[in-house]
Image (cartoon, rainbow, N blue to C red; front, side, top):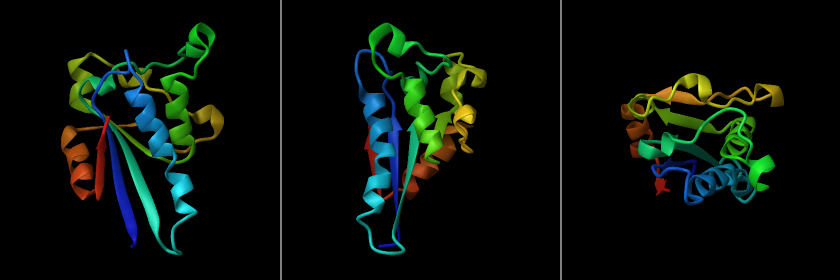
Length: 136
């Protein structure tokens, strides 16, 4: 089987639904799939945020304090902690006036990965190379 590439593409905003949280949770869950694979086989997920999917990211979200649930920021930090590749569309961030400074990182948790702000062409290439593309 080799390396199975998965692309989880979030194109809806995080508000009024849980689509982005589901995408993040599914992307993190790839680790449980790896224990069922044959030796040498791997799963490589990439989590991509495009369109309105780039909305709602900010540092120091207070979702637990306000609503009793984990925040999108906390979910993204877990992605970075398990070395998941996370991409944000540069053009869409610019369109909505989102600065790279507001994107969460997981440095305090010891994560080596960072959210990558990339042109849409790079996200499109990732989707083309993936065996499975899931839209949220």
